[in-house]
Length: 168
View 1 (cartoon, rainbow, N blue to C red):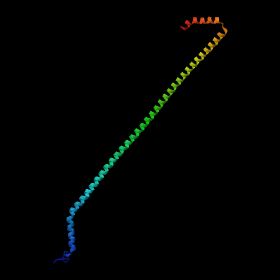
View 2 (view 1 turned 45 degrees about the vertical axis):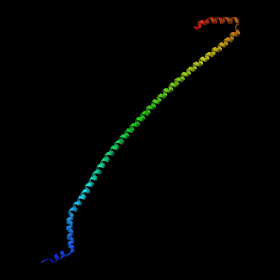
View 3 (view 1 turned 180 degrees about the vertical axis):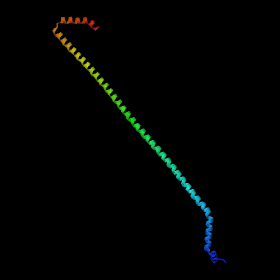
View 4 (view 1 turned 135 degrees about the vertical axis):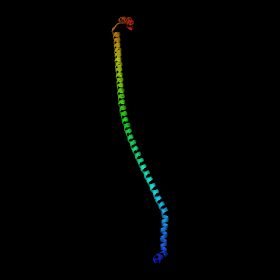
């Protein structure tokens, strides 16, 4: 005879809903499982690629940073060298300017000393000429006042005779 619980179980709609649910779940599970796992695998692969890309970008950024730091050090060394050359050049130019200034001052001093010597010579010459003029004037006056006309004529004749010998 048939079991009354099994007959009553088959007659219940809840039982058939549960069986349908399990059957539906078994039928749908395989493709759903593949789709879910495939989607998760694809997402995991995409995340792995993004992490690899991020790692590559990080390494590239570190390489660029190291290169920029090296370039900065090189630029600083070059700037220091330029400053050192500029200081050296400025010191050299200062020494050259000082040497030129000293030479110019020496040349001007020599020129001033030459002008002073020329002025002294000119002054001495003028003093001699003035003394000669004064002596001549005094002699002329003396001769005019103290000598008679005969002595004066004889002195003039003597001076005229001596002139050709003194001019050569």
